[in-house]
Length: 568
Ligand code: CAO
Image 1: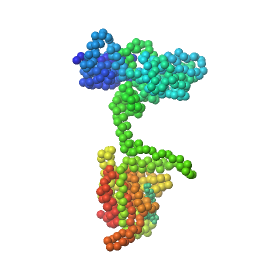
Image 2 (image 1 turned 90 degrees about the horizontal axis):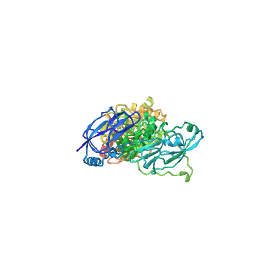
Image 3 (image 1 turned 90 degrees about the vertical axis):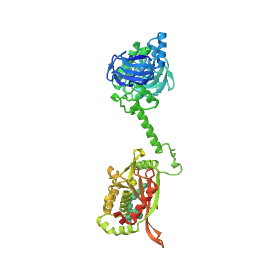
Image 4 (image 1 turned 60 degrees about the horizontal axis):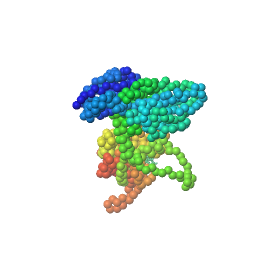
């Protein structure tokens, strides 16, 4: 096993700062794995390992200032590398033996068609067409066009991305060397292009023309599609890129071994990430701007990207679980069949629709039905009429239902709960707040009556009337519609024999109340007329079983049949 000291490559600046160390002592690294990230005032760059091996020592530290040929890492070469190294030695070749491995991870951003416009500029001309060609991209070889960022007719500012090219060593975004209007684009995704190939023709204004400078002097500016390209950092990037390109043209940095860490910034970009991360982001079509960076100075690390992708996948499966992907109902032109009138849904309608849809798709609903015999309750309730009038309230069956449900919720805590932690836990609520569905001209709203178990029937009658009034006048405050444990939807005043209400998620159950009717009930010896209240109980079968619902329903029906039980 032989050792080799990996040195800092030519990074295009005298001194650069070590801002990230990507390996630890003992790590096995493959050729091209990132070793450190360096940062100059112009750019940041990942330095990949030229060889595979085991990290024996890290010879730099975070924050340290380093320059070309400083010791970076001591590597114990793997067997293959040793063999190669000895072959190289035999062949008497020197450093280019890196064969570009150290450039592999880098993404050189090329200068805008650097010399082209300057060569073609006709000073004093009015609007004129300029051909923008592929600038010096550090290789004579043709590279792939992986993205064309503009199309004919687009107005582009100087520095806006025109195309993204990718070689096996780097990807680079080619910015507009000057502002203008795109007349035609001669490249398309999948094409190969090399230095000097025409990319597009731009119509350039006379003033712009006059101001136009050789690319080596021009500054690049704003670009939002930053994740497409090479290393960037907004500050410094503006000036850095063209001049870097220019210096690259002039310097012996064209030699293979000096290209490596030559990474320049994407103009104006706010995203801060290394080439390897950018490459990965491109492969997954991730907008790096959406990823929060946890590295030094907010740099996006590979782990950040992995976390982001994991979240996306989890959210997607959660959405799938919620029913996305089901075939859409086709739009129909109803006017083809007769006269129609179209009316936009209110905000409330749309909100209700979204809530119902979400609940319907997420919650496995079961609905059970029962009739509560409220004959005695009705006698009692009607007997309160005079007093109610005096008090200025209307004593409908609703306050009784609230009171009975509160007692049933206390007796059956599974109903006074919510699922949490993605279905891993259940939260039992020690309070009893019940929502009441209120039909209003604007749509359905559900104000919440708090601490129902602690309030008297009179208080509940007054409060429900007040909340229903506010709901109809659209005067409810948001907090008056929050915190419900359970909901009552009463259509009793309207009609119907029964319905299947949709659970008001994240609550676990809802009681539907239909119209009271007098029904013949067999008392063991004869049919007697009884006031029967049709009830339907929908619940979330993930948290509540049929037997639980049976018990809840039995308790509720008994409480309503004999309201003295509410005192127990
Ligand atoms: N059976 C028979 N009559 C009933 C009844 C029932 N189950 N419930 C109420 N009534 C009677 C009341 O006693 C009242 O009669 P009087 O006028 O003779 O006193 C009448 O029906 C009207 O009652 P109300 O509707 O004004 O009062 P309420 O307390 O019963 O209900 C409220 C209040 C706000 C719940 C109700 O007005 C409402 O908006 N209901 C619609 C709820 C809804 O839309 N649910 C569906 C949601 S899903 O789309």
